[in-house]
Image 1 (tube, helix red, strand yellow):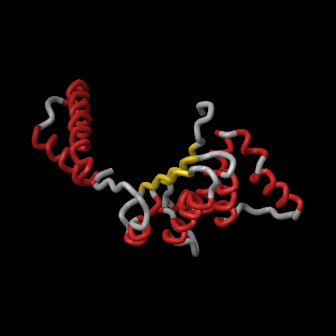
Image 2 (image 1 turned 180 degrees about the vertical axis):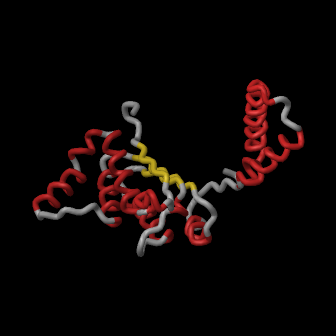
Image 3 (image 1 turned 135 degrees about the vertical axis):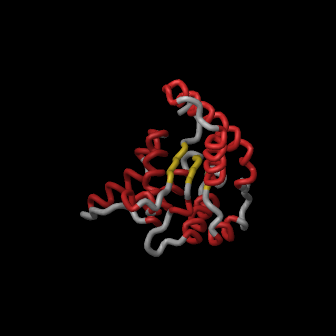
Length: 192
C-alpha cells in the first residue's frame, strides 16, 4: 500500500454451495476487516484487537456477527479512510440478512464514519438492490454499455483460438463455425 493511501477491502460474493461463506454477509465483512487491517498495520492494535481480547476474556468462541462487523468497520474508519468493494452483491444471501438490510448498514458505515468511506458495489439489477441504490448517488453500467468491448474481445480471442487450431494441424476452421462461436459467446456474455 502506498504511504498515506486509504486501505481497500475487496470481496467477490458467490452463491456457490461449495463456498457457502462467500454469500454470508458477516463472513464477507470480516474478510473486508482483515484486508483493511493487513493494509494498515496501525489498525491492528485498535478496535478489532480489543474486540478479540474481550471475546477471549468472556470465553466467547465464535465468528463476528454482521452487526459486529459493521460496528468494527465504523471504528476502523474513525482512524483512517477506506474503500470497500463488494462484487456480486446479488449473490450475497444469508438467513435473515436481506440485500436491503445489508445496503442500509453499508450506508450507516458511510454516514457514521469520521473519515471518508467509499463503497463500490457491483451487482445484477435485482429489484431490491436497485430500489435501495436509487436512494443514493450511483453510477449504473448496463450490459449495453460494454457490448462493443465484449465484441472486440471475443473477436480477438476467437481469432487466436482459430490460429492455434490451424497451427495444430487441424486445417481451416469453417467461417460459419467461427461466426457461430462468436455469436454464442457474445450472446451469453450478457454484459459480463
